[in-house]
Length: 203
Image (cartoon, rainbow, N blue to C red; front, top):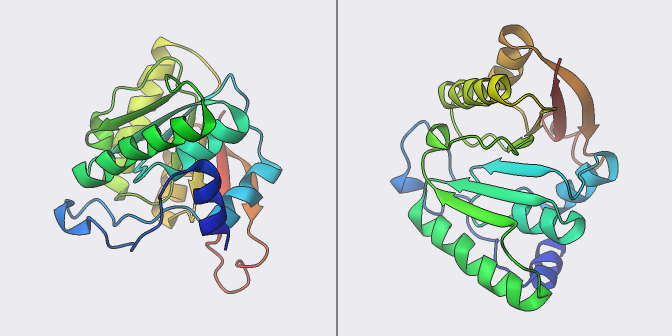
């Protein structure tokens, strides 16, 4: 129900088979699957995003997270998607979202590129991952983030949904990121302990 409700509210279409577009992806990238709206509700009950933040969603697919955050919190959002078909659907969603909300769209951006090739902007300070790719790609992106922070010091946080043990181990053992908060999805966690968000802040 919430999948339909929020897509209609935002005037976008982000539903679809999780395998959609997967055949075109290198093996180190995983199939498209949007974060459930029910999970996003729980995340933002317990985690604050302000209009001054700039959120980057790696493996954004059709842009669900981007439009949700911009609509409710007016933060700047950037979606990174390597699949051309999904990228084009995100751009189409941007048009329909803009027509419905009358929001100016300069604070919503999408880039079609490999995630590790995205140039981290000095304004980027929140980074979202829903297990979109292998640990090798994740390590490369975190390294890009750390280099950016060296050049432009700022507070940075990494948000993991359905976190892989490889991601957790790397952040906690090979970087200065520290676990700030765990947000458990109450209706799903008992059947699947990965149904949670982990928020890491650079120590």
